[in-house]
Image (cartoon, rainbow, N blue to C red):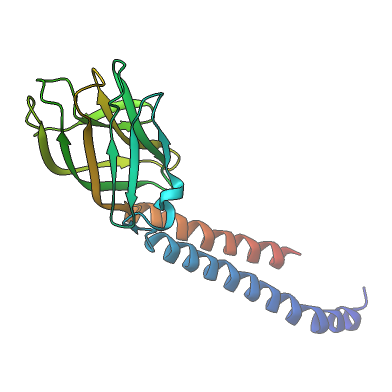
Length: 212
């Protein structure tokens, strides 16, 4: 083997290889920092804007006379069915853009003078009625207000419904306001694994270049 030739090749190739190793290491570290920073940057939505602007919601009267009136970004009001028919739900639904805690204020009133014929409202998550008002005065002209919060995962469907039991003598109306979606922040252990994984990948690249 020509030692002089080997030395010449090394002098021309080794510095370039070292530079490439350093470059890939820096790229991996930068990616780790960017991903960790983006994780901490919660994609929160306040009011009916951004991911939860009115266009992101689907209204369904289910054959009744129910309606929705938007006063975005502050609030919207669902008015239940009042054109006859039994147990007709008027709903407003959307899809969760990211894992978050959903919170809102609600105010419910009913114009129906008959006891119990306008069931108040409920929250729907993935097609299941999971939450209902807890302080509505049932009976003549039922009314109430409060605050509700619950968790959703990205891709979950959720929304609100107003049910009219008899569909006559006055509709129930639900107003949703002070809506917010607060993104869930991963636990520190998850962030550590993310960062250490990318830094470890940089180390693997350096070893491969060293063996080349």
